[in-house]
Length: 323
Image 1: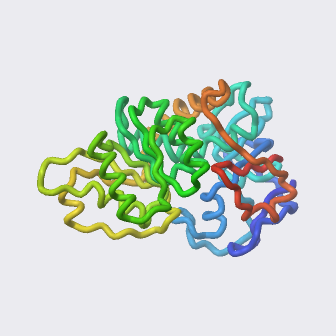
Image 2 (image 1 turned 60 degrees about the vertical axis):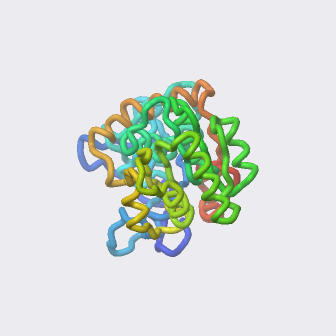
């Protein structure tokens, strides 16, 4: 079969022949792949830099962690791979797939799940979001951030504040459900003052953070108390596009009612993952099929994998490989 094969971790995946995978037990199914998204997670894992990758000896591997395909019985499903998914054939586990509604196309269905995982899991299970709460999304102009705005709105957020760098993408969030936008392309004092003003008017209940780094430091500092009662804020770290480390003063931490947690591989319980597969993803697929969840994609062909691996896709779109 043809597949996107990574031969060395510091290289580029190649369009190459690779042995078709063979099911190892009764729980595994062979799937004919139709589409698979390329996410930052895929790039990080392929390079060996993601925390979930063990330092095993390098060997040729098929890349891609999830995607859309057709089972032997003709059913079209989204699935998390038991083998690399950017290939003509892949293995999946029976209990890690979601049937797709007829109204959603393969490309959209492949693009959506990672962003849902990167938003709904944090909102539902780490932040424990309730209807009527105020949500600040730090780094909302990327693909996952745009989905997060819509998911937060769907879950009943009273007010959504979005930060980002790209001015045009920031403005587009207003049509997706954001109530207020804040550019990170301003000096620190102005950024903190804007967050403080918002927090004093409509206290921020939840922060969903895709950037970490300096902007996270600024947001946390803007919540710092002065020895009086403070509003409880649940800060959920999901990405670290602006850096993996921050400085957080003990005074800042002690002076505010703050819940600081992360949402990612390894942080969820088995029941939470089952809810993702049985309830959350099916609901989001239905919303997308009905046109109630906006998904922007750029689709490319598998044979062009080497030239598109590091392709910069602007404006919060998701790159999807069609097979």
